[in-house]
Length: 255
Image (cartoon, rainbow, N blue to C red; front, side):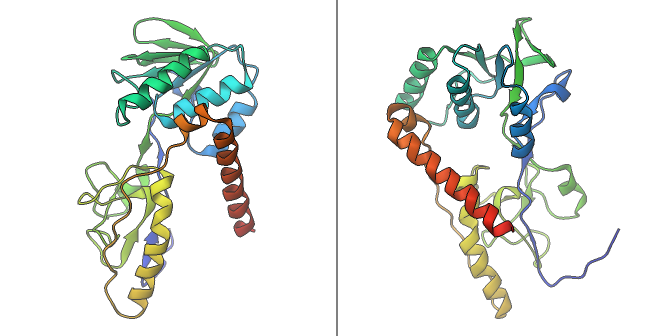
């Protein structure tokens, strides 16, 4: 244990992946950390099939990507809710459902995993599905947050006000997925988290000058290219170029 004095502490550690409460969860490839997901998938590209827990945008995007990589491998997406993408418009959900059918990707709603092994998943109704299991079950707070002595929101993340300042300490700020402003919440998604950068810079400048950080109001809507890319291959190529440019920029900044 090392005590480090500070004038201002900014916490931006992101979110973890919500664990699957199933027997054999050590065999599940979780969505986060992404590096572990990629390395795990790289060694399983010849798997007899894939089972994806979670039919949100991330889980479905990976399902389509796996189909492109493995045209003949069985792919099953398992979702606890009555339908996938419930927060999206009906026309969008219908379009995705059609594309899933066209690509031979099975979607099992109101289903859950009960047991997972290295080469098989067992559903709660006893159905056995051969393949590697991946989990895209949403964001979860790190267990570390409960030991920091800072106020927590009802979802377990750090509670902040609309200035991104901790509810319990004025010299602590939290931004991105690790923070929750219950008065103006946002989904735990990168498209919202990255928008915290400019307001955070403005807040730090304000504190440096002896002023209170200004209130922040991030956008409420985010761009989802999942449905569009299925309709137009050129848009998919554009998304791929944008993604690669962002990754290349972050790699350059880290060196």
